[in-house]
Length: 206
View 1 (spheres, rainbow, N blue to C red):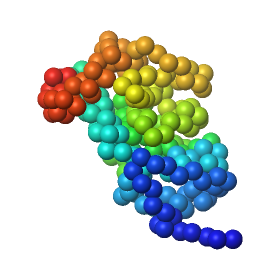
View 2 (cartoon, rainbow, N blue to C red; view 1 turned 90 degrees about the vertical axis):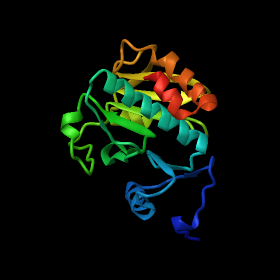
View 3 (cartoon, rainbow, N blue to C red; view 1 turned 180 degrees about the horizontal axis):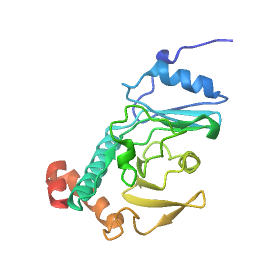
């Protein structure tokens, strides 16, 4: 059997690698070997590990959406803790995910000052954001980990999914921002940022 170390594998931007029959222990070891300072995103679901290298388009979109969430929270004077692309995993659920961005809002007080996350005792993020360009978000992982609200941006459209009885259903409004038409406005300002620039679009959104 030929064995390769992960540091020998190069994933070009916009591409992904799927590894089958990966045990939880191997997944944990891969996280350690790759480290926290890397350009790839990992998603683990019941033995299948996906390694994705995002495109610049992906990174720009996720930053803009994250900035808009922060603007909304600030203007509404709602406290939050942002955990970015932290790894969320539970061995008993056999799932692990690294969202493009995520926020603790309802549970922000519980997560203040946390440097490590243990979903056996810590809650999942209240809001997670994914930008789907080269791969599709694994809804099953988010459902298993119990993330209440998930935003997915794909092909110029923002989808809001709300967890109900363990499954996601698409919603026309965000439970976090029930009075803000985010499904319509966020894609508009993302498009605006492409022609006018990110900072002007963020100021206009505010």
